[in-house]
Length: 111
Image (spheres, one colour):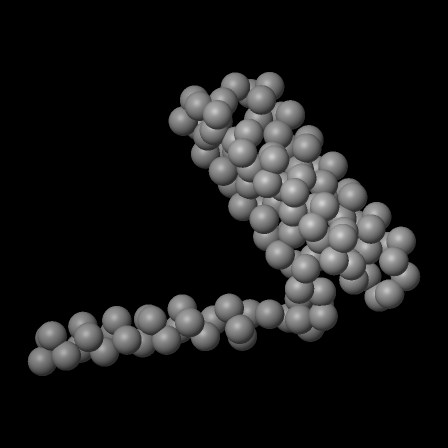
């Protein structure tokens, strides 16, 4: 009985994990998937910077510089979306450029 309850709980948790991201998307996220992805990457990098700083892998000055780079990328994302005039969407070239900048900053985290 306990084994079947445990199995049932694990299956329920797995279903919740699989369906939650789809349900969690709000209207803005569905209509601006590239911007949502860029902003999620920036948030993830901020968490990584905080973790690396706590672990002593980077200095406070390095953390500050990395966060400044991410803020600059976020500002560019907003400016690109505003400049397009197409309801805040990013075009392919803009997404590629922003991702390249995020990749470069990501590589600097934890070095």
